[in-house]
Length: 111
Length: 116
View 1 (cartoon, rainbow over the protein chains, first blue to last red):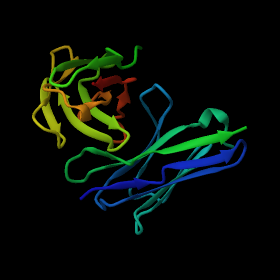
View 2: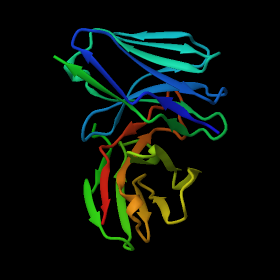
View 3: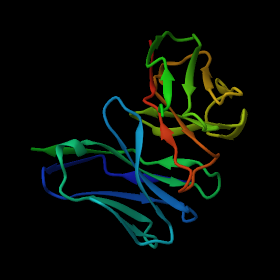
View 4: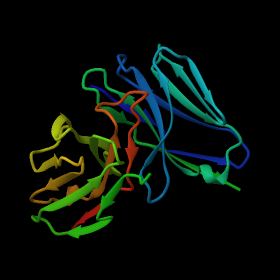
């Protein structure tokens, strides 16, 4: 079945880079997404990548996609305390068109 | 432009009761999707409505139902509540149906449902 997995927790120091990893199973996914959820708020789309791309950069965010290993990562450069949140990786199911989310990675940024 | 609004924000019910949650999409958006978020199961897709028709459905029992009105507002109903229904219910709106790069889903803040 379709499944998306992420590590649950990551702690970094302010100014360091953060790398959040995700693996997925649906090789027919056309898009892969990263969402951010701050306490008490809904999900905010951060960035996405087409499945035919290897990398996408958007300001401090870099997404790397290894389609062979079905591995996706989100790198946040110069991590700030305001980046503390839960980050969700999601794939669009090739069969159903639904968004399949990972469990979310809680990013803790220490000053 | 106002974002996606959900009412109520917090709700406490007891087992066996039923509940109705409301979602008002961004003006001009015709698609509304609902998700359930729990610590154990994470974020799971419930259903999507587009132009008053259910377009897609997740793997939830029939106690979970929804509808969409002609103004694109959507309601979600859960009947015969169980303890396990305690969750954050998120709705998301988009201009078109489905999830694509040029059809971003905008999420509301959610309704926190607690079943006692």
